[in-house]
Length: 138
Image 1: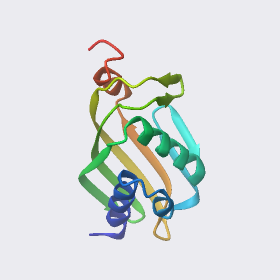
Image 2: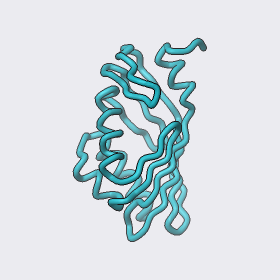
Image 3: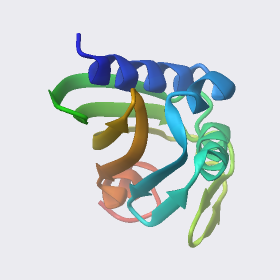
Image 4: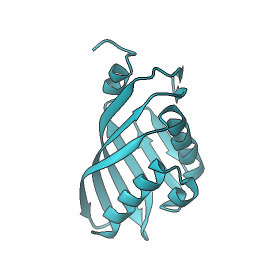
């Protein structure tokens, strides 16, 4: 297993376990996260986002499907799944708990420097997520 793959798997596991202090150590302090509808700068902003997501989906689990590495770049294909049992903050406002489960495919592109993430770009279908939560018609 490459260092990049180990970093990606470790970061996802720590996130799932709610070990935020350890999770933060997998990235540089000025790491950038870009995802659907959001761009976050720095570990503290990313931690707030992840803690908020785990409040909305406290049982969230990430399952790695495949990992591709090339130099300091890692591409991770994964699925995240959980039950929406807490308030979910979005750029458009807060969504009250629906009690519905989601299972969403995602890809992440992670750029590393000295064994830590310096940028993470995440790609997933937000509309599919809203459909699974029952917030838009299917």
